Image 1 (cartoon, rainbow, N blue to C red):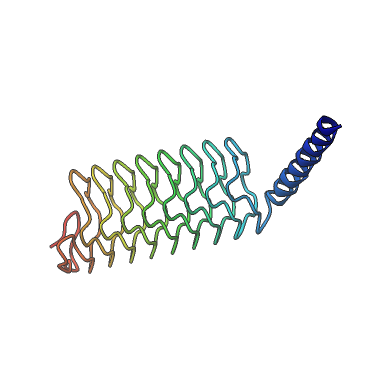
Image 2: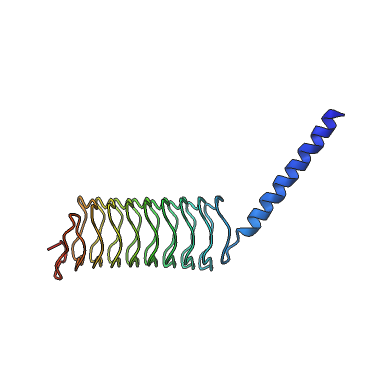
Length: 211
């Protein structure tokens, strides 16, 4: 009798877990305000979808493709985005604090005013990306490619920029206080009125280096 009761309780708990998981999955759809926190979405193909203000906090999106999607104001705090594709994606005002963007494709992405504080962006592709007024304080951009990127007014304080590529990038009025620029490629980069690593203000004609 006791075994029968325990078995029935076990079935009930399994059903509750199943319906809870189904409900959670139903909230995680490629639509605005999608609730996908903590979910495993590796290899997801959501190109061109409207996911404005969606919540992906702590989610795993390795190798996911969200090229051309609208992710304005989305929350990716602490998310795993390694090898994901965000080419031509709108990530303006998105929260990517402490996210892992290693080897992520962000070419021509819109990241204006995005929060990338403490993010790991090792070897990420940010060519021609718009990072105007983005917060990259303490981020790790070692060997990242930011060629032609717009970083005007961006906060790069204490960022790790070792061997990063900034060829022809716009860093006007960017804050590089305490940033590590060892072996970084700066040819043609604009530093007009930028705050250099040692706190001095770069002259108007600063190109390739702070004058």
